[in-house]
Length: 122
Image (cartoon, rainbow, N blue to C red; front, side, top):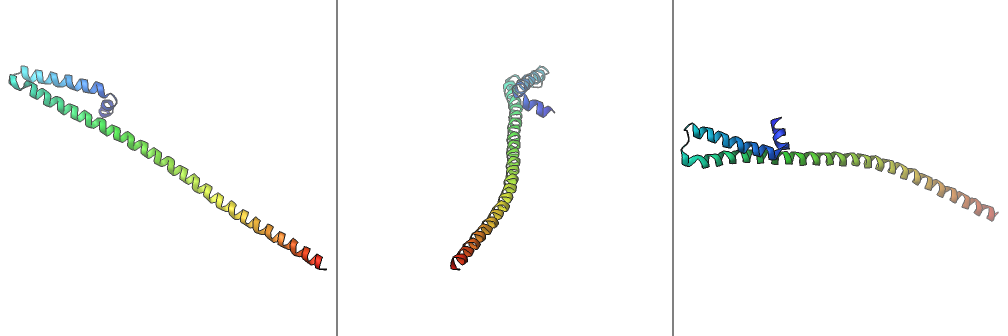
């Protein structure tokens, strides 16, 4: 849940991470655990760590969205392919019917021509 919240509001998450980093570093410095000269380096290191993790989360979320879009397109193409396969099967049956009808009509024409030839021959 926190991951989704961070990835959906990335700009707010970065700002909060930087503020949190500054507060933690200041608290540790006030306690006397950090020398004065190392304060900027520790702050920069923590900020970089938070920034890198948020950047990684953002990229992961972006790739997941793209992966989902590709999956949806793939399902759509599969659906269209099935429709096309059904249409192809129907087309083949219709073409076979037309071929049978064409053959029957050709036979009918030939029979009429033969009858006409016989009639003329008589």
